[in-house]
Amino acid sequence: MKFQIGTAPEKHDEFVKSSSQADLLQSSNWAKVKDNWGSEVVSVIDDGNNETILASALVLIKRLPAGFTMLYIPRGPIMDYANTQVLSFFFKELKKWAKTKKSLFIKFDPNLIHASSKFADEAIVNKEVEKYLRDIESIGAKHFGFNLVMGETIQPRIQANEKLEADIEKIYPKHTRRLMKDATNRGVKVARYGTEALEEFARLVELTVNRKGVALRNLDYFQKLMSLYGEDAYLHMASVNVSEKKAELALNLAQIEKDIQETPEDQKKRFTRLNDQKKSIEKMQKELAEFETEGDVYIAGILSIKFGHTMEMLYAGMDEKFKKFYPQYILYTLTFNDALAAGSDWANMGGIQGSLDDGLSKFKSNFNPDVQRLIGEFTIKTSPLASLGLWFYNKRKNQP
Image 1 (cartoon, rainbow, N blue to C red):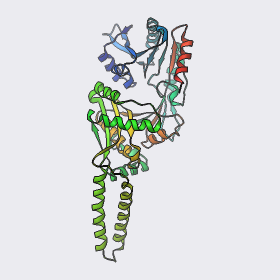
Image 2 (cartoon, one colour):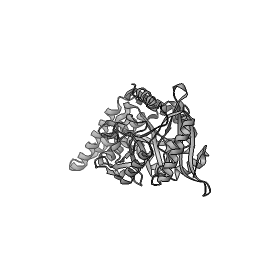
Image 3 (tube, rainbow, N blue to C red):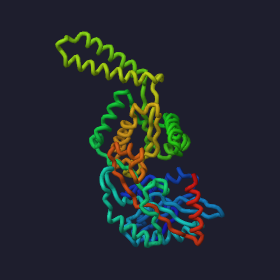
């Protein structure tokens, strides 16, 4: 075996995509997304077998004061963790290389599922991954632990991941399917768009930022993502034409009132059904009366990137004024369907709190995803000054 620095991006990506641990954050293009960090691709090569890659990692390099750095391997490294020989060799050589970068410490969080369940079920622990944890610790890595709070580690340890299949709606709870129908009845339309809709998407994300007080990204960042990942970047948007829907309801109401007048008194069931329809339309008209918009209006959006066998749903935004139009329920479903059509096995809806009782977790539970609990974050000290560097790092990370 040999340790290779500067592995060709296309060879690294091919190796990563072929692994069950494949993750967008280990794609070579992710270094261009995180262009405020330095980066390098390092690998373990089987020198005697046509230079086959045995392990590989996109390493991000963050500059620290006084010329020091920290190294971070997001959702990696990628390797067969059952092969302890490769595991030991990779990290022995990585630590040597880290010292040439004046690295104080290395952080990494492998894409290994420690436990999984549905929201209402007890998690089933993967015993094999428990062994991997012990093996990783044996090479000098300190495990952060099985944290439940999303912001405690660089990447969320717990995520909601949808297993894709045809007619995905059949795995949803009944109330989710009802809300999908409500969205359609209110005239919500969903479709995939290109960069022409990015400004509207950025506007919706900004509304979400202002509403929730969370730090998300801006238009330039979204443009960079779509440019770097090309046809593997998916922008799904929901729109509604309120004035058109109002006109449609007015026509339907006029027809129903005509039908009621023409219904013989002895046809009580028909009379009751028509009156129920009339009440339903009048109720919706009342709900729409507050909206004065004309033409198509974008009300929600999701930006996703397909990499390997997973569609990563990275960013979402919604105009809260239209929350009773329930656009996200058919928007998420379109994303799942397009991901399946593109050959994905999973759609990753992103991180959730381990308590599973916060608003974001409850929303994602509407789609009946798997709750995947990853192995977590590790730290390897690579300098006598590592403890001091980690103290400063944690202090800065915890600042509001």
